[in-house]
Image (cartoon, rainbow, N blue to C red; front, side, top):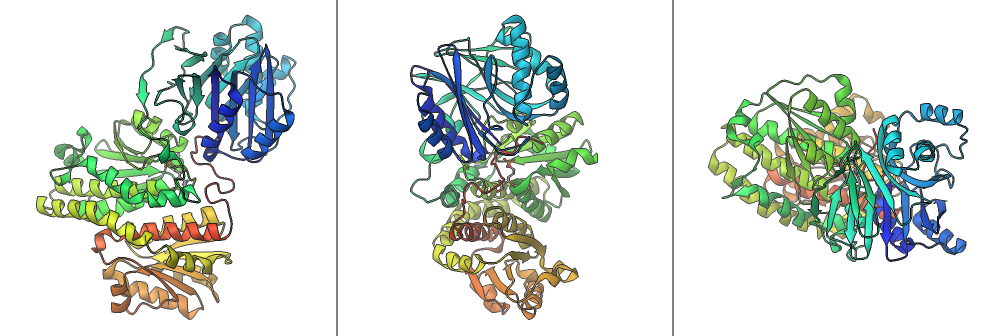
Length: 610
Ligand code: AGP
């Protein structure tokens, strides 16, 4: 959701800005731009489209260099993607980049029009730039101007600003949108996310809400809302450059699917002790768990789909009722939250605006909040009462894969912990489950990775279709929701997930000759019923791809046109190779169609606006 980079230091800023934007392109990629300051003037180059178009334009423009600059890659909110709507936005005294949404931009525009301003773009950001310009012209004090403007602005923002008469200095501030600042040997940087600074430093400061940072060539000063200087905590980066690179794979998505076995180990191991689940947070003490009446899981998109898996496994093992809620709906529907309820927020990025808003709602209601987050120190992680980190490492592809797999693995482990505390399973059973998770999940994912060619062949059958269905029952129905999202997100094939028994209540009217239906069949107790659903599809000419084990296929005489053979492992853990297999299927369909797998149209990785 828009990427911001800024650099001031000994070197020319232009290549550093372009490199930084490349690393942040997953956050938004419909247009990009840079502004560079030199000798009391700011030069700006902006372009609709991908970064290479901007790089080309910079080359053609020539003569753009300077030690201090800001850059932006955009996911449009206000105004279509175009050169003029791209950031940075300029006013007489400054250039500015913004990630977020300014809700009262129309009010701000009215004030500015009254003061004689005119506008070039349709963006909220240009209004913010000109508001700061107006205040700057009054006192010639950048901190005063930014503070005054931020008091007027409603909405979310991370801002990077350069003034044409303040040499080699970037100002940055934020509210509800992420921004980090860091020092390197050759200068100082601002960025929306860690991958942009990985090549320069291993340390950074996460800018606090409402704090203004003044970033000079070799110094960073933080100011609080009263204008007094304040301290920030230096944090260490626990990812390395290689983790944020493709490592020889053609796409980040494929590389990240291959990361899954290791990511599962890195997620589970720190949360196991003496062979049992171990969560070092008081919220998951035995006594506390016993006091929970209900659990709510709140998240968006793929993370919410992991929540559905969590619900299935927690209810099954621990017999505690679990609601799964879409974060963007949650707080607006006045949810019933009891004092003995636990709310689990799940987020890869930890910056998703809807999830953050839901978390704040729960805190205001006095309910316990526990975050499952991948990005260390992110907003959701910091604001929840307790946090459990997943060990996926950086996830760059817009389509989430390894983050989902490890969220599911961690929820499984939590379910075992909660079941143990609620006396629903014995210590021996819990120990057996833990041991088998740690060994079998990575092994079974490797097994699926080795079936790459089989899955690619099946994917070739889907390439030309317009619609597809994913069906399953019980746990398979939960996984179908994510399988379907994955396919539509990156292949642009319309796809729906249905509980296999529900298809006949209406949707089966869409199944005609050759309609692909992917049937997930791993739950033995209901396999016969799933088979009935598959037969109904086949009798209407549907093309059935079944994902199941060879033994279930044989025992239940499952009819199919193609099969994704899953490894013969305990049913409890079959969801994991199944998940990987449907991620691979979606990947291959998109790659075979020649689409931009890692950057699907209209999307961005981290959705930091509501
Ligand atoms: C899925 O592939 C998506 N990229 C999207 O649904 C994502 O899971 C959602 O936006 C939530 O993001 P988060 O985990 O960072 O909160």
